[in-house]
Image 1 (cartoon, helix red, strand yellow):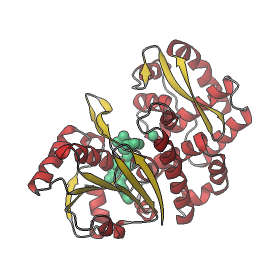
Image 2 (cartoon, helix red, strand yellow):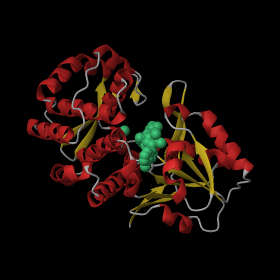
Image 3 (cartoon, rainbow, N blue to C red):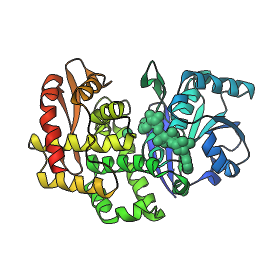
Image 4 (cartoon, rainbow, N blue to C red):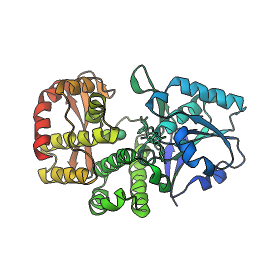
Length: 349
Ligand SMILES: NC(=O)c1ccc[n+]([C@@H]2O[C@H](COP(=O)([O-])OP(=O)(O)OC[C@H]3O[C@@H](n4cnc5c(N)ncnc54)[C@H](O)[C@@H]3O)[C@@H](O)[C@H]2O)c1
Ligand SMILES: [Zn+2]
């Protein structure tokens, strides 16, 4: 088991990789614990949750609402949970985001921890302290920054995960390599077959590398004033593609990373050979390099980007594999260049 510490403004977060539900009792010893999980995770792993109160929520983005948060407040009150209690979210990113928000606001904030059970949650959603729910038709519109006290990541959970869910995690893993670590990118090039076959040693290494990359960025910029924006690599276009084409997040982000990488080539930041390597890895990992979307719908998606400030959008580009840079781009110029960029991705992908 390895531990990485994220130092948040409101307290530290210990991310333990290679530790599962069996470690939970020692982390919450002597405290009242309420666990929150979803129906699927309860069915699959309910028997391994150490004896504790378990509250169940439904599955799917549709339950990521203030109504579900309200039902959790009621469950905490019914159980008489006070400030000394600890809430533990056991599940994917959805359970983590909702549980973290409910715990952060109940009694002005009780401690919480996560046991992420999807690859996406282990490499991304469970770390970093962003909690929240969807509101008014927008994703993650209402929420807060607050770090979980602990995150217990065990790759053993991943063997029951659907391939589409695994793909979402792999897309974020590729993202971490591209923005921060050439060495991790080369590891993926060499060992992606083992990763796709869920070889525990390779998976655990990829989860650990992701934890140190995302954790390191959050340690330097918890509230996304600067460097944390690099974690949005591929997501500006990714979110627009996801909304317009209704494809899984990981597919949209993969295609979004190719567009951002092509723009990096067009600006002379990235060598064309490196773009080709990125495309080959994305394809080898079973992810798409291009998803056809009507450019007008793509433009609508970009204009709805939460990270946009009026005329400018903070675009994450690559200066090489393993090195990201954030550049403010004029939105009109971006929209004008988009058809040519898309055409270039089409011909190189
Ligand atoms: N807070 C953040 O920084 C952050 C970052 C990225 C994503 N997110 C959020 O995370 C959410 C997506 O997370 P996700 O992809 O983990 O989805 P999810 O939590 O919806 O899980 C996907 C599906 O897998 C099932 N599942 C979970 N663990 C399983 C297992 N071990 N075996 C079999 N099935 C299992 C779930 O029941 C669900 O049906 C989104 O709401 C997104 O906004 C948050
Ligand atoms: Zn993502």
